[in-house]
Amino acid sequence: MTAKTTPPDADGTLQRATQIVDLAVRACEAYERPDLGGRLATIRHTLSDPVVHVVVVGEFKQGKSSLVNALVGTKICPVDDDVATVLPTYIRHGPQPSAQLLFSDDPARREPLPIDQVQDVVLERATGDATPPGIAGVEVRLPRNILSNGLVMVDTPGVGGLGSVHAAASLAAASMADALLFVTDAAQELTRSELDFLRQAHEVCPTVVCVITKTDFYPHWRKIRDLDEGHLRREVEMPIIPVSSALRLRAVAGNDKELNAESGFPDLVKFVTQRVAGGAATRVATQAAASVVGICEQMENQFKAEHAALADPEAAATVVAELNAVKQRVESLKAAAAKWQQTLSDGISDLNADVDYDLRSRLRRILEEADAAIEEIDPADAWDETERWLQARVSNELLANYMMLRDRAMNLSDDVALHFQEAAGEVLRHVAIPDPVPLVGTAQVDHKIELAKMKLGKQAMVALKSAYGGALMFVMLGSLTGIALGPIGIGIGLVMGRKGLREEKKRQRVNRQNQAKNAVRRYCDEVSFVMTKDSRDTLRRIQRQLRDHYSALAEELSRSNAKALSAASEAAQRTKAERESRLRDLNAELDRLRQLREHATAIVGA
Image 1 (cartoon, rainbow, N blue to C red):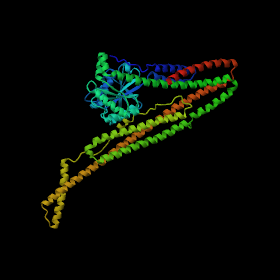
Image 2: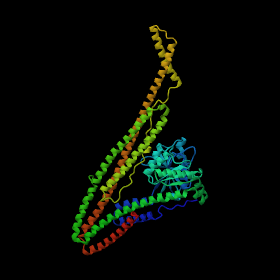
Image 3: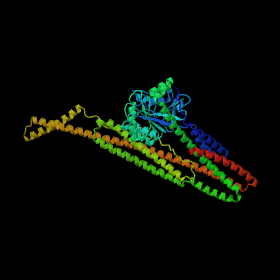
Image 4: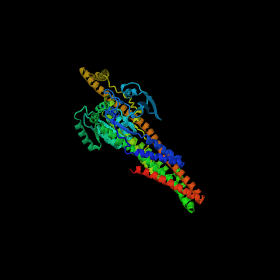
């Protein structure tokens, strides 16, 4: 059974935007503006291949992989009761089934992977087999209708507890996703950790849906759904869709429409294809149309200047003078001392300092918490739990630091655009900020702690040594004073032995605690070293992105002004017949550009 889906571009917005961009490209070619045409070519590529990321997250063994398999109608993601996926799987459309390994190199690297080995690779680390280093995930391409409009399903690894490092990684992925499918099964109502995760996820990705799985396995799933709805009303509003992946797969295999409806998947497919993919398509179309509006205005202004000079030859000198003044303003926008350049430079410097301070403050709080916790425990008994807590705690703080960097970078982009508003045809809204959580893996908790406690033999030796020394001291003291202690000396020796053993245990515990504190400090120092470098590199990339974007806009405006200035200067030298002929041509061109701009504006305002 092939699932029927409503295409994201059901109202034709994407198609209309594509046609408008194609018209604008032809206009740029006709008016000899390859610079504007190059920008439109990039926009055209985005329209032809829009990418919509839907990230599937949730607790360990809640049915995430089964859900993805059921959505695409084939068993591509591994489902196993004994092991779990440990690598993200990206599933997108392709003419033929194929797969590639994704590496975390810079620049990104890919290697072909046989499609029948996908499940083995995704589970490889969990089973202990060797894997090539630096694998960031697996990309699978399938000829599926639901994926044909740019939809990319992302199956994330099982987090094994939403307070873990993987939870922070999932939140970071959510911040870059178009939608989030949070998976929880019908075995029980949402837990406190799940609700906390959903609240945080909704802050970074406004399009979130809670999917209750395994409704075929738990007869009381409706009661669980009602309880979950009550919890979510108190925490954050989002839709809940109960589904059965097993029923869906059987329905697809048997082309059974009734069973498919019973599985609950039609509602989920509708949500994904219409609200998620459709919303993304509308957003891409709107951004493309806004770019066309800006480009039309540039070319219209160029022709309007020439039109004014031709229509009134006596005013041509005034028009030329005004264009020369505009030329100076445009040239000033390209200078290093331009206000937008200063805003960008100062903003990046301030952001560097603030992000660094915020990271250090967060790590300092972690150190204080760790020191207090270690004072209450013996690392020999609880170091594994302490290490897991430390990694999860650091991951969450890194995520908060990353969110601050992302939000402040967006604000900086808006500030730069504000100072460039007289020249900006569009504002750069999406800056490339990578997920910071994988960097935690580059730092290891190298504890160097003597975690082994004294064995019974060692304890006996310490006690015997203390007892012998104590007894010997008191026997010798009795001999010197002429007092025979006899059995009393042995008793004193035993007391001394016990006291010595207790002090030795205390000394070793304090030593382990100090070693544990030092291990935490070394780990936090390593994290700080790695993250400081990464955040500074990220901010430099953002600075270059914004600088290159607005410098290109300034160059476009400079070229538009130069063409207008040249045409206006030539207008005074034309004969009356030439002016009249050229005016008719200009009126026709301006009318075409006006119509194109109005069509694009209609999409922007839709």
